[in-house]
Image 1 (spheres, rainbow, N blue to C red):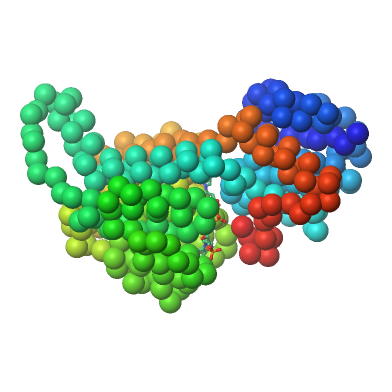
Image 2: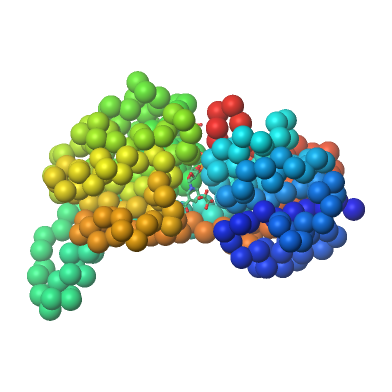
Length: 316
Ligand code: NDP
Ligand code: OXD
């Protein structure tokens, strides 16, 4: 019988074991570090933030599963065995959760909910003017599984939506830009920048002072807004803080940070223009994700191609 192992140093493993046993009752489910058994037995491993060396020490591993959509943490393991296929999560449940988050935070900024909250606390009845969604252009960086779904839902809400990706895309009612050649025009139209890019060497530090300078200042608030639910590595945090302090950025919602958990002494915590969420934009729900993983294992054992394979050379 094939054995399967979870490697989840930062998550409680019990709900995942229970879910996997439910999703694949015939699978021998183990977990690192204490319930791994003989390393030779493990054919399948599912990981989130695995420590280096663990995957590399499973000599008979056939498939690696990332329990998240992003695979940067697994790929950063220098001891990762080469030539073993890696499957990442692409599931409607996770996609819907991310789109809820993006729509929620675009609307929060657009309708100035934080100003309303502050007014309520101060018992101030201030019915200030608002503007239409069509007056706001949301630019989605990363038009993959998550970016495309968020873009479609923002279009449904009435926003102008533009998008940017590595290769050219066609999306109904979304003006799409691609590559370095398309970046400046994309940024120049963007009032609210949504980042749903993977963390790769090409996207590291992409949200920096130069990028912020290129964003539109013609929107309703006269300065752009940032929503980053991609990865913390993509933002130069000193540049973000400077831009927020100077007014070059009107506000930001940040779900991801260069160091997670965000250190208690970070200036982001109590910055008046910043909304923080703890890398929780789109949770991986154990039973949903385990059913997806079990489905991929069944495909593999029937000789069918695995789906949502990571392109290691590309980095996502
Ligand atoms: P996909 O691989 O489906 O999409 C990635 C998109 O980014 C693609 O459109 C790709 O372009 C584009 N892209 C990659 N590199 C570049 C580049 N150098 N320049 C321009 N565009 C680029 O990923 P998902 O949509 O599933 O997920 C995106 C990311 O979201 C994950 O990698 C993860 O970091 C983050 N995430 C965060 C979560 C959270 O809770 N905060 C939860 C889940 C994911 P192309 O289409 O041409 O390949
Ligand atoms: C991620 C995820 O990649 O939670 O961040 O799926």
